[in-house]
Figure 1 (tube, rainbow, N blue to C red):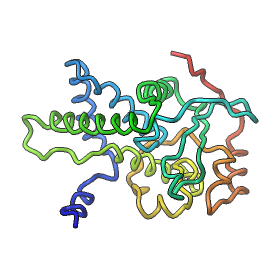
Figure 2 (tube, rainbow, N blue to C red):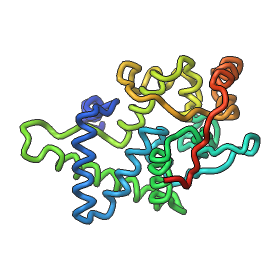
Figure 3 (spheres, one colour):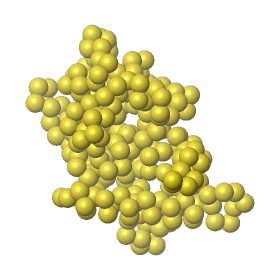
Figure 4 (cartoon, rainbow, N blue to C red):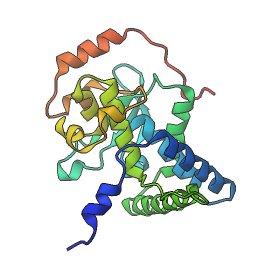
Length: 238
């Protein structure tokens, strides 16, 4: 029997409080200045995960590409839970051309620094990021009379889901963005709507919505129609 599993899981945060994030980000930047190898990579991943919600190991095998039908920029993600039937297809895609240039930079930085050729390399990277996060968490409370933060890599995905719940009335959009096969997954296991604080600026392609088990395409098309024309920032802009 694995000891302490339930208690350990319970202590892991399913949101990212602003104050804890500010402290952690400051600590990571300190470690970047001190020359720690994985600190910059960790910061890029955490910033980007708040924006698009990838699972930690999905950054190694995803890319920015162009939607063939619309010509719009999309983030194409290889779903990490596909092999065990818990994802909405081998890949999912989301439009990223409504993001601010700084947000796009976070994403492209995370993709570039986490790119791996093999699963073994990706596993090693995830372990390195986990250890770097633990070191930064410890540094963030040095000299303070309070316990170390319980933030994990997955906490940032939880925060993204909470933001999705706050931004979208239809749970199918959240499921499609997160790679879930069912709308129930985010509802039962992820951050709560009340913990959401940011407006999500990405949304899934129709193909990704179709892949969700409990899909409502008519609602989705109404959602897209209401958005109207929009400006598309360049991926290369400053």
